[in-house]
Image 1: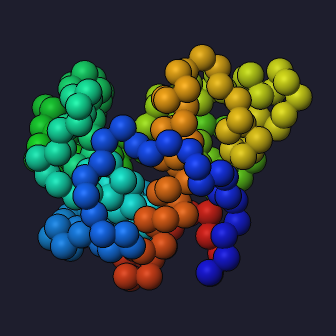
Image 2: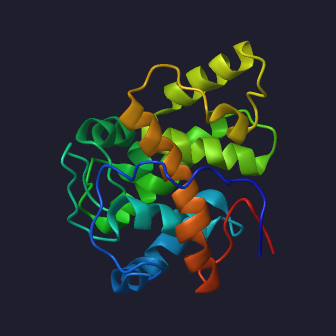
Amino acid sequence: MKRLLIILASSLAGPSWTMPVIADEIPREATIHQRTLTRSAHAHWGLNAPLATFAAQIHQESRWHVGARSPVGAEGLAQFMPATSEWFASINPRDLTTAQPFNPAWSMRALVLYNAWNHKRIVARDNCNRWSFTLSAYNGGLGWVQRDQALASASGADSLVYNAVAPFNAGRSAASISENRHYVTTIINQWQPLYVQAGWGHGVCYEF
């Protein structure tokens, strides 16, 4: 397994919400939801969906705890804020009906769809960079990704390459930008390999 893209400083601050978990271990709860996540991923991304990436993202968000609630109010497996749940359900009435963040099937479907929504709107050098920006957008918002890209471009950096944009901050607090950069690298470099190796499917930004 060869890492292609995401190698940033490991000293970045951790996520805003974590639960105790043994390092390098897939929670037992993950296997309970594996089939449901697989169905949602295949339904909305096709059979080549990066299932290990989605699983790693849920691992980072909630450690697979269905009833997870962050100190700032994010809810469920996918850790959507209430306003985001309501908005995203309203623009996806066929697939999400009403907001149900503590329903694991709804939460996983919303995560898969929200990643697709961001992915379609991001311009990047290649799919690996596009996915890095997609994860950044999931955590911090698409608008911030686009503003960071614009700032990087104005400074002469390659705005289509995640590692070139990562040092730029268009206005977030130091804690928020640190969390956001940590989010991307942790999902791709730390959690994703666990799920690839466990046979969940392929991930992103890796060459096998």
